[in-house]
Length: 126
Image (tube, rainbow, N blue to C red; front, side):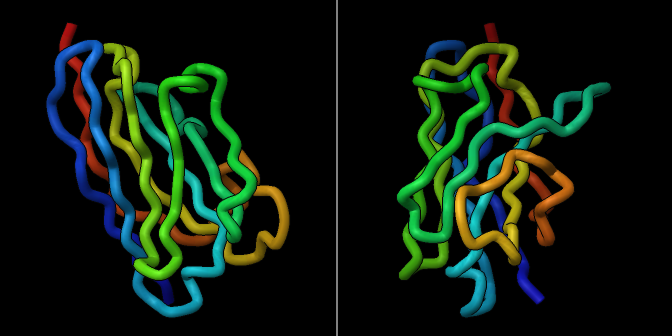
């Protein structure tokens, strides 16, 4: 079983930055593709960014491309989401997820991910 714990959320003004972290338990989790998703009140959970097991392949939602950067440190079994130029519409609960079976390019579908964290709140004020 893999457990994921997110941290780094908070309240920030528009234009500001936050760095989210997701630490995974379990040695095997360092070999999983990882993703970040978010869910705003009244909306469905949506894809934000994903990174392959090696870290060489990354995908971003169009809404965050150029502002967010996903990275990973396999030695620390940690995935990061650097969020710059934040906008009020980025306000949501951000979830980290692990895709156990992925061996290539990461997927953007929530259905592909096997393990989920509990989420961290990000609030961007205007």
